[in-house]
Image (cartoon, rainbow, N blue to C red; front, side):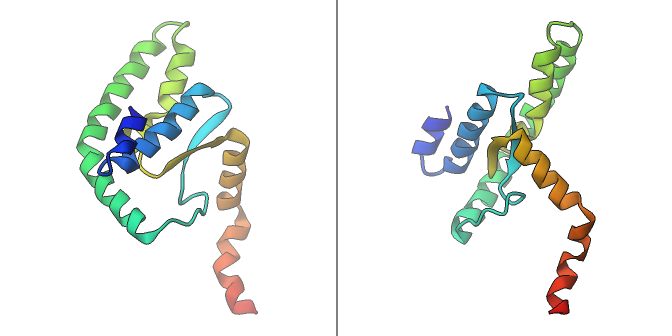
Length: 132
């Protein structure tokens, strides 16, 4: 589905997000989904603006997918066998809601990104440019 959406120019941002989501589903306990803005990846301004428009248009459909995903997590959590599948679906709820601008990364990289943005040094980073 992601490949078909990527071939159409209009839904290319959603298609690229779904391709990244398929990589996540291939190895869900070793990977994580992250926003490209958290990874400091530079994007073309026109592509970023277009992705924002597509994201706004996808939001009602993504909201429905998110509610269905929550119901699916609750249903899978009832049995012991379904707990692992429920964890995978729960990890991917943000991608259901908004697949635009997401990237599949290893979990170790995700932890490093989280530690960097949550570290006390980040609080003083804007002040460093005035110290020079």
